Length: 135
Image (tube, rainbow, N blue to C red; front, side):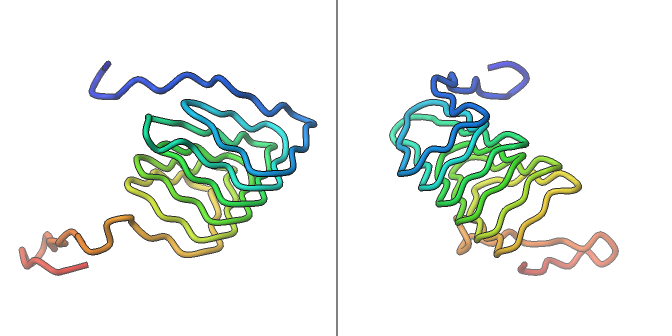
């Protein structure tokens, strides 16, 4: 662990640019999509996982993994149970559930953003009034 960040699992599978894959993909550790997937992309949730959807990639289906990095298109629901990174060229059409979210300027979402632990809403403290509000 360097500077408080955990090491990423290795990316062992690549769906190359120009490739169109039809059907569900189940994987462990790491997956990078540079092409197109017409089906769900689901990581084994018993081990740390990462999926990278690159700038020119398209996924038409559900995406579920621990750490998800999107810079391409996803048409379907997204669920990240560790960290979801929406890069500047990310385009998501579907609902998003996340543990932690990092969204860059330019990323687009047409759907609902909801934390996985919605019941544990953090309190919001207004700096001017020092009053706690429930978000």
